[in-house]
Length: 372
Image 1: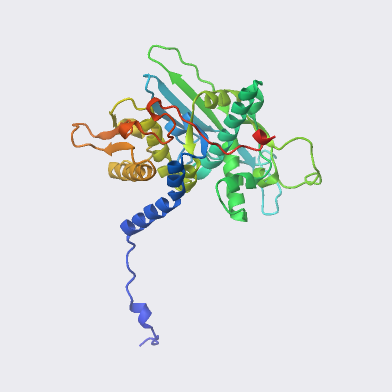
Image 2: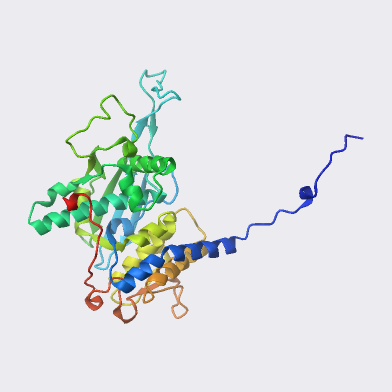
C-alpha cells in the first residue's frame, strides 16, 4: 500500500457556488449608495455637470480590449439623419526590453513596433474629461467675446487633475492606468458623419489629439535631464479642429456624479447616458427596435437576454436619480420587441430650470483655464 496521508476536515468541505444574482443585487445597491449625492443635488437644484460629446453618447467605444483596428457605430437621429462614428486605432509604440532599450528587428535592423489598441472600457473617463475642459473653455471665451479657437488647447498639468475629479486615489496603479488610457486615446482617430436622405457624404479620418506636451505622470515618457526644469509653456494637448467642431456644436450636460458612479461599469455607463439623452430628446413615446440598439451599443454578443438585463439595470439606475424617467423593455402592448422611451413624466427633466421647454441651467466645476 502507498503511504498514508493525513487530511483535515477542510479537505472534505464542499465549495459553494457563487451566487451571481446576489452579487448583482449587491452591486446595484452599492451603485445606489454612490448616487445618493446626486439625489441630494437634484433636490437642491444645483447639479455639477460635465459637457459630454453627443457622438460619444450615441455611439460608444468597445467595452473590452479588442484586436480590431476599426469599429463603426450608427445612430438614427430625430431629424431622420444618420450619425455614423468610426473609431480607428492608428497608434504604435517602440517595443522595449526589460532594461528599457529598443528591441531591434534582425531582418530590418530597425526598432520593432507594438500596435496600440483602440480605447475601451474606462478609457471613456479621460476622454469625457478632456471634452468637458475644451467646451467649458470655449464657452468662457465666447462669453468674453473672444475667439474660441484657442480652446483647442486643453491645459493638463498633472495626472492628479483627472484622478481628483473622478475621486480616485493618486496611487501608482491609477496613474499607470491613466497613462495607458491616454496612450490609447492619443493613438485613436475618429470619423463623425451626419448623413441625410439623398445628401452627399464626405469622410475624413482625423486624430482626436493632434499635438501634446504633457507631464510624465500622464504621458508615461521617461524623465530626461531637462524633465525637472520649469517651462513657461503650459502642459496640455491640442484637440483636432474637426473633432472640436463636432463636440462644440453637439454636446450634452451630464451630472458629474452619474459619470463618477458608473465609471468602473463602462457598459452600464453607456446605457445610462444613452437612455438619458433619448429621454431628453424624445417628443413622444417611441419604440426602438433591438437591431437599432445593437448598432449603437451592443457588441459581440448574440444573447438578447443579456441585452435586456443590462438595459433594465440601466433603467433602474437612471430612475433612482430621475424618478420621472420613462422607459420599458419589450412593452406588452406592442407587437414588436424593442425599447420604449418617452418624454419624462409631467415634463420634469433632470435639470429643473424650465423643464417644459427643456432649457437647462448647469452649474459646472470651472477648469483651471477658466479660473485665470
